[in-house]
Image (cartoon, rainbow, N blue to C red):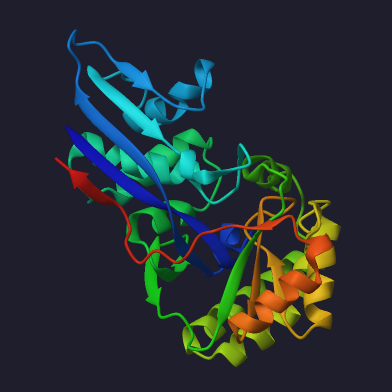
Length: 300
């Protein structure tokens, strides 16, 4: 028997811009996908996927094995990625692809193979940053052209909460919609803003990170409007304005339009006070934290 697990992810900076080769910043989170592989009594492939039915349940397996059905009993578990019975948008498919690749190969040296598998799963869309988080863990800067992963230390004095909107969103749908659109001035502005925010994260200064987010969020808002992406829908817009009024920073995480957002400040007390004061705007806080560990074999 082999069991492997891999963490989810939250994109902190450079969403969308990473698709056009700008650097992005991402953190792995301690909600993990698990894949368990055991011998099959009859030599046939038996797939157990709690929460998934029909053809959908085979999508990750077929992507990882390139359509082959190995003669194992395979259990795939992404229950940690759901809240209120809904997906939360923290990279369950990438984490599961990484965990299954590791379990089938009995190895954690899976970055290249998992990137290929997840590309098949997404029809070639995406940057691979969620796969990088699942493989490497921690906080890191990521560059798509080279698949370079550069670890970053979390800035001292920077606190956060993960906010769940209660509305699932489709990252693949957003990226697919964007792919058909022409270059705009706001896209160019985003490609300039993303490296500046990445540099702020790499500086280790909480003040620099918070200050750089202010201009970055403005650029991201205009980018969303110009491309009709609705990044700040599902309550993100109101939370962004409320946080700014209270001297904090809030932004949608990843593709936006639902799923989750990140609330940043300098102390836990001010974050908790905000959540209490702005309770009508907050669907809920997602209980997850930074995971310094990437894919791992849990038993073999």
